[in-house]
Length: 292
Image (cartoon, rainbow, N blue to C red; front, top):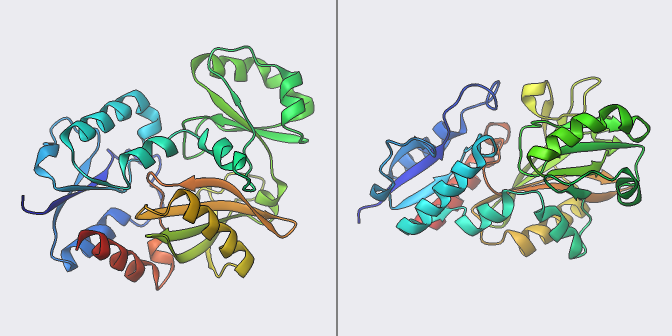
């Protein structure tokens, strides 16, 4: 079969890609330079004939959590067709639910994990207080992205929000985590790795009086050089959980000089390719190594 690659994206409605450089186009330029035939397609487009592709580069399926059952069905369709994907389907399934954070924590890595509020179960405030020891906490869906349905609240104000959160939990599982003040004070670090090797890093700082670092909420993105200890910490997690991945973004904060994981992004992270001189060349080398 002649090599023909799909850059897998989504139907954009502007919800998750405002004020961004289109990294699908950057990836398309890379594949063109490598003389690899390709198309940009949406994972949810019923008109796409997936069987014509020799490989899927899953790049920006940014609404997968809005249509999670359909996304899982699509994954099984691709699995049945036997089409290879980067990152691979097992990795994507594992990474699609934030319960993976608890698994990483259980292996001894410093993680802002929290506890799961199981779908349909009555929330116990006493259990939350016992497991999430923090003056403030953050509640978010277990399958989510882009700060969707994410709520920051003071523990003492739980009663004011309990009915709303319970209504959410009646519909789907949630994760409740301690709020980390360093996110507001300093920001969240993102370190990018291609084929297991460090490429570049940024610091995402939230807008004033906000805690969400995403650019579409007014956050600021600044290229940085990570400290040796931060890089070493992130490399250890990549080696353990993402050594086979084309790309992985390690998001986290430093607490008293120690890096703590907040997200290990291996489905569709924004890669900040336009913010670093070495990012695109590193990405191109990684793709060339995978595609021959």
